[in-house]
Image (cartoon, helix red, strand yellow):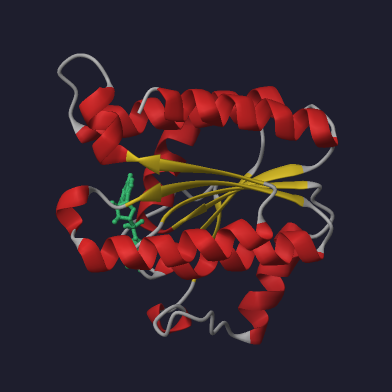
Amino acid sequence: MQNPIIVTIGGRGHNALDNYLASGLTVPVFHMDTDKERPVPPEVQTLLLPESAVRTGIPDIQEEQDAAIRGVLQNRDIVFIIAGMGGNTGSVLAPYIACLSKENGAYAVAFAAIPMRFEGASRARKAQEAIEKMKAYTDAISVTDISSCLEKMPGDRNWGDVLNEVDRAIFDAIQAAAPLDGISMLKEITARAEKILGNC
Ligand SMILES: Nc1nc2c(ncn2[C@@H]2O[C@H](COP(=O)(O)OP(=O)(O)OP(=O)(O)O)[C@@H](O)[C@H]2O)c(=O)[nH]1
Ligand SMILES: [Mg+2]
C-alpha cells in the first residue's frame, strides 16, 4: 500500500490515539471527535465536529468540514478506522468514514470496540446496529469485546491494561499490513485481527 491513513474516532479513538503516539508508528493519523474537553496534541491532524453532527444517528456535517474529511481521505488506498460503537460519535462517524473510503476505491479496515457488559442492553444494541452498517462498507472488521478480553486474558489485568494490549496488537497489525498490497494486506490484517480476538 502506498498511502495508508489511520482514522481514530471519539472517546475510544482518543485512547487509541494516545497509544498510537507512544507506539512510534509512522502511518499518518487523523483524529475526529465531538468532545471539546479532550485535548489532542497539536501535531495530530484533528477535526472537531459539533455534537449536532452525530446526534440523530445520521451524519449531519457542515459542507466545509465534510470537504476537510474528504480531503484527508483523498488518494488513500487504505483507511484503518479505530472507534468504539454504542455512543454517538463513533457509531455515526465510523460507518461514514468507511463509506467515503469505499467511494474513493480505498480498502477500509475497521477495529471496532463494543460496549462493556455493565453499560447495558440499549448501548449494546446501538453498537450492534453500527457494526452491521460498518460491515457493508469495510473489507475487514475486527470487533473487540473488552469484557470478554478481560475474562479470558490471564493474570490480574484491569480494563485499561486490556485496552492498551489490544491497541498494541492493532498497531502491530497495521505496521505489518500497511506495506503489503491488496489481498495480501487483507489476509495479513484478518489473520492478525483473529489473533487479537483469539485472546479474548
Ligand atoms: N471512551 C472509551 N470507550 C471505549 C474504549 N474502549 C472501548 N470503548 C467502548 O466504546 C464505546 C463508545 O464510547 P466512546 O468511544 O467514548 O463514545 P463516542 O464515540 O465518543 O460517542 P459519544 O461520546 O457518545 O458521542 C463505549 O461504550 C465503550 O465501552 C476506550 O478506550 N475509551
Ligand atoms: Mg465521546
